[in-house]
Length: 229
View 1 (cartoon, rainbow, N blue to C red):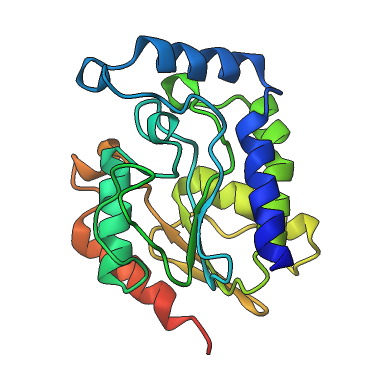
View 2: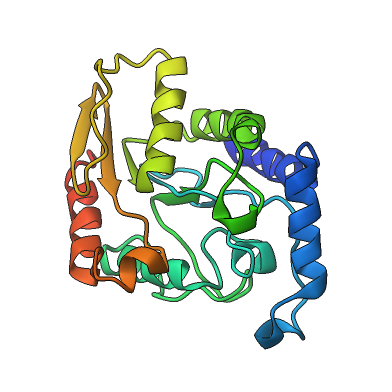
């Protein structure tokens, strides 16, 4: 219960955070202007907390909220095409009760999985600045530390991989040097933790065929195979 309470408190801090002026201005501008197809929606327009099962053994680390996805809905990977891919794959792998994620009240429940990102506000052009990444880093560190059952971390894209690697190094994990190169579907064992890498399910990757549904399903099949009872 303490872990759940602490995660809830962290979520409140993330939603209230105003440390990065450029990101705050952008997220609030988008929430006011809106996309034409969502003009009747009330945008979240704040920092986006992680989402899922506090007892999760599987963690999924992305990049940042999408301007008209999580910045609109207030839930990680919710309301955009990347989320459509992610939650369909999680459902196929048995981590989600449904394959879709459209808003915070759609009934989606994750079991044994938690979804998060290194940056909590939607960045212009989906490109956070290093200083913004560093300002958000303590949130990710505290979150991952609270998820004490973690066994496998799926990193969606190189950005999520590097952020996860920095956390592990700071926490004293024996990480190999040089750092293994980001490679789709590769897995790295670090003691009692396994890192699995995947291309991010962005439209840049899914529209071009660089990432297919079969490839993405294989990632989560691999991840489940590394979970211990």
